[in-house]
Image (cartoon, rainbow, N blue to C red; front, side):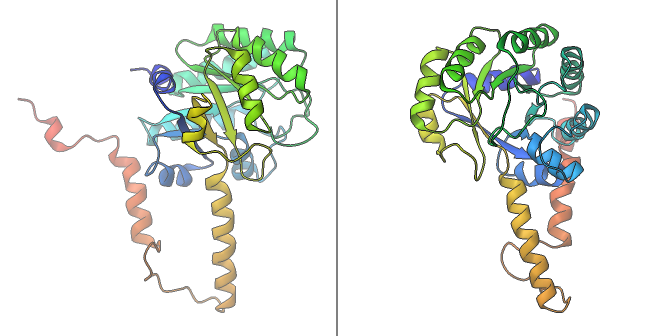
Length: 288
């Protein structure tokens, strides 16, 4: 099965599909032990690859190269990729979509922001005229073969949110995302105007949206949930703690004896899985 169709079937199955934000190969290696779907978050990638905030610094060849490395290590994982505004130009957006599909991405998110862009949960977002965004979106939809396309609006005015959500639902996009939604009541209002179109909910720690469980999201008829930053923010906290403890101990490494401690052996075993996923068991190679 193609990667796009595999994700599309997952989205259409009962319940809410969680996709975990990963920002580098190591975070993806850890996440793969818990979930079978990744979200390639622009927030996390900008932070990890450039050390910069998610305000438009990402160059599309860097994102494509990262997704290619992910697919090589994780041949079966769903990979939903944040491509921001398609890197401004509609033709570039189509080119990136075709490249991503060729290397095995499962889907992309295309937003209606205009430059200078912002994180979806930040203040000061500006959006393209709806007709201009729809023209770009439709070109992207025509350029894909089986790739899942999530149409995202970053509108902030109440009437514009509903107008755009309804318009996105009328396209051939597979899923609609209204980013920065502020309440359960707003999820219900958006759900009503988009009809039967699958709905995606974005959760980010410290963001504008409520913290909801998958059970709650299923009850609200949200078919997909992306978790943009749990790996990134957990790493931030853990690294800060570890280095603080190292400094306090005058540079002496702690003894890795407590349950859950990570040392060379555990780390290597984790990374070896990224090789073994491409090699079937010896028994599977024996013809009968």
